[in-house]
Image 1: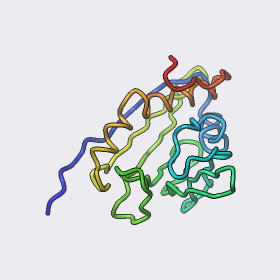
Image 2: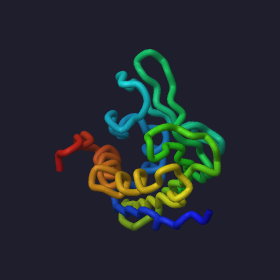
Image 3: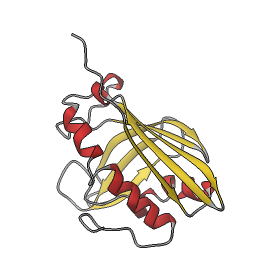
Length: 167
């Protein structure tokens, strides 16, 4: 059986902060800007969002009972210009750690001059997932990567990150 290719979801944004600051906030400050409503698993309060800063590191949420949900893995860690994550969340919103079932999220940080950085996020290989259309649609929607990258921009530029449904 041949799997139909799904075009990558791409989102670019230029922010008023230097490259090294952007990379540091994206990885080390992940929990300061990632939206708390964007998690899977039990319906508990999420107390931490973490990206372990090394190849093979986990991307995970920790809930109020200390339970961790490992939803991604660091595939490339090249400070301060590139981060690649395996995305383990399937179209049924369950985690599958099988590498054959993961998509890839590549974030590049490029100096745009005058203390600004262009972030380019590409979510590719979505067709590898179970129910890939249930991944592609939501991540491309206004409430997906555009919203999430807006929250990142707010944080790195010193504003309180926007809430879902608020522009």
